[in-house]
Every structure is written in structure tokens, then in C-alpha cells.
Image (cartoon, rainbow, N blue to C red; front, side):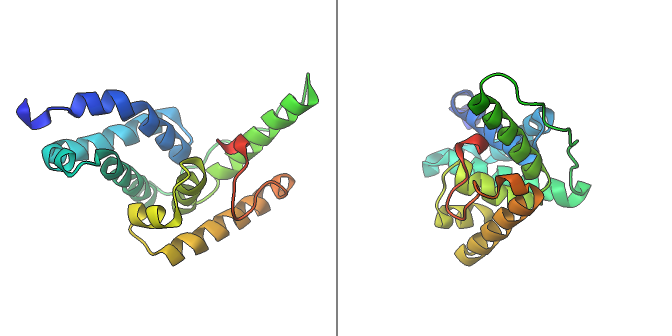
Length: 175
């Protein structure tokens, strides 16, 4: 048991945050749970060394993002069902926000795995370009260009959201 000292505490404390990120990457709760579990299985044999390094969350997140990209490559792009957004009802601001959230979620589901990872890291997790590059194992220039392309694709997929999607921020509805 000494080999895994602190692992269960880490999972209890950081598991929900990892699951939220995985859900944003996969768009599906069950796939997100599988993704987190796969990342933790890869972490477990290295736990003592990773924990001694002082930043196990960064390490497991890197595994999470790479595992997601590997799944996508092996299985092909996961197609999310596209449903028409519900008709706005009630207070127009709340209804408008709900519709925008649904539209943005559907558009995120149609991005490539790498583009989606860029959006999740840069805007949902508020990571810097340097942190994103480190986590994904690419250059800062790649992060900039892929983020720009992902935002352009989101604008093209959902033209009604184009006014919200800038190269520097994703609106709160995506969070």
C-alpha cells in the first residue's frame, strides 16, 4: 500500500475537476468517466515518482489530454447527436443564454479532438499558451494557430455565436 500512499486522497480531491475537463473533451459523461479512469490507471504505477515531483495534477491532466487524442485517432471522431435547441421560454435573457449554451456545446462536439482540447485548456481551464503547449507536447505557435482555427471553425459551425467568439475569450456560456 505504501506505493499508492496519497493516491486515493488525490483522486477524491481532484477527481471531480478531472471529470469536468474530461466531459468537455468528450461531450459524454460515460466517456468522460472512462477517460479519467484510463488516465488514473496510467498514473497509478508512477504515483510515488509523480507525487514526489510535487505536481501530480499537471501530470495526470497531460495523460488525460493525450489519452483523449489517442482515443480519437483510434476510434475516429465521436459524433454527437445534434438536436434542435428548445424554443425560448420564460425570461428572454435566461432563454437566450440556454440556447447559446446548447448551440456552443453542439459546435464544440463537432471540433476535432485537438481543437477541442485547445479550447478546453485555453478558455475553460484558463491555461496560458505556454501551459497548453507543455500539456499537449507542442509549440506555443501550434497552440496559437490551432486555437485560432478552432475558434474560426466554431464561428463557421454556429454563425449565431460569431459575435461571442473572439480569439481572446470564450463567453461564460461555454464554461
